Each structure stands twice: as C-alpha cells, then as structure tokens.
Image (cartoon, rainbow, N blue to C red; front, side):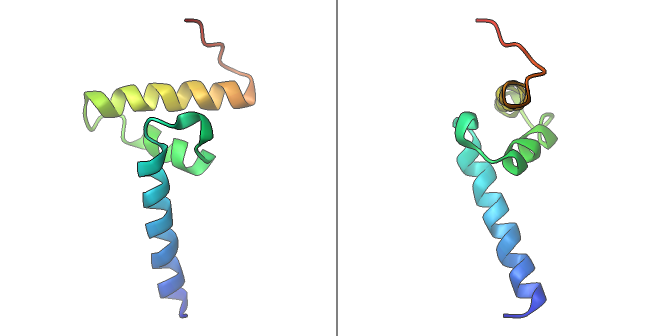
Length: 68
C-alpha cells in the first residue's frame, strides 16, 4: 500500500469516526470530538453536537463542569 493510499484510508476512518461520534460523544475518540467542534457553524444540529462534544472534552480533562 502506498503512502497516499494509507493517508486516504486514514481520512476515511477519521470521517467515519466523526459520523459515529455524533450522538455518542462520551465514547468518541478525541480526534472525532475536535472534528465535530470544527463543524459548529454548519447547522443547528451541528451546533448542538459541538456543545455535547465540548462538554465531553471538558469532562475528560476536568476543565468544564456540566450542570443539568
């Protein structure tokens, strides 16, 4: 497998991880959560997903306290 093929496969895996992370932010890898944050202005549902992603990142690294 060439370097470009490996990179293309990595991009495909990363894209799939982002899709899978939406709605399941607690189990998502950090890379997927950061990608979700990058799409915050795409739509209202993307904004809500980004809020959940930010809350999860804050929870993991103890800098955001989420109150319900």
